[in-house]
Length: 224
Image (tube, rainbow, N blue to C red; front, top):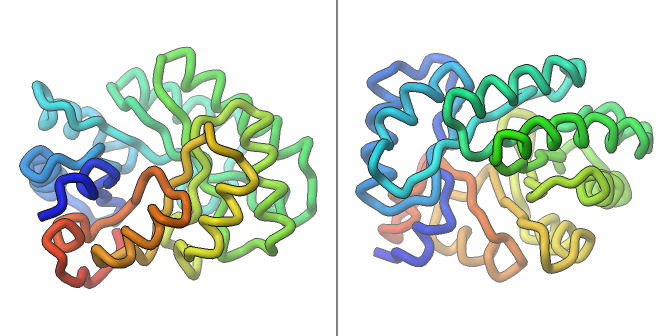
């Protein structure tokens, strides 16, 4: 088992049909394997926080997920509520239409408002740019907007809208944000080799539902 790899992993369960028992199970797995966090939908934050109590594993919640097509004030409300419920990290989806329209100002405004709410609660913000739907130029624009808006991480994908993380995208994102921001590779990372390749490309966090398979050197079967 690679405990080093485990410390990079956000153990993820975002399926709409996930049950309370499912959430409690992945929290127990995260504690057992030493994952960095458990990533859940906002409705499950309180359950996850309770299940992780006394452990170093963090609770992460998604916001504006999975489409990003939510008004900024709603994203802010959702993020603030998740942090109040105990989430230490928030993964928000950008307004993808703004990125595709090359509207940097709109992206910065959206991200900065959520960042302010998240940081007010002493949590960190990861920004999902949904690489599968963007050109390389739009990916760079979204990453630059995330830096300007005060995000803590940029993240490749939701896993719900086409392709997931690629080594090339992670390299591009790392080159754009520089050494100080986190880069999270998410979507399609299902093996130890996948995870190692993403980390070599510049990822500092891995989002995966196949975390156990990854640390055991096996092949995971699905995302989220």
